[in-house]
Image (cartoon, rainbow, N blue to C red; front, side, top):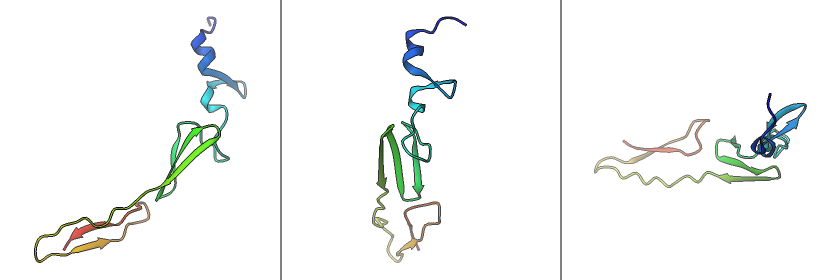
Amino acid sequence: MGKPTAIDVIWQVLRNDSCVEERLCKPCDAEGHFAGDIWRPDVCTECTCESSSSIQCKRITCSESGTVCSRGFRSITITSNVSECCPKHICG
């Protein structure tokens, strides 16, 4: 194996005797999320690991019905299932 290049030295470091990307050395949280990871702790919240010490979470905003139905029909709200944050609206 050849001598490591400057790029190898900058982007990879040792962790538990294995060579890994530097961003994978220190997690953002106790759950093991690393810089660049995006996850949903629940269906209505999305979190992003910005760096090894910064997590940003935001709630998903559901829009109002906004469904315009033809004359004689009305907007019906369908409660979301456990995997969706926002309810759906249909005309019926």
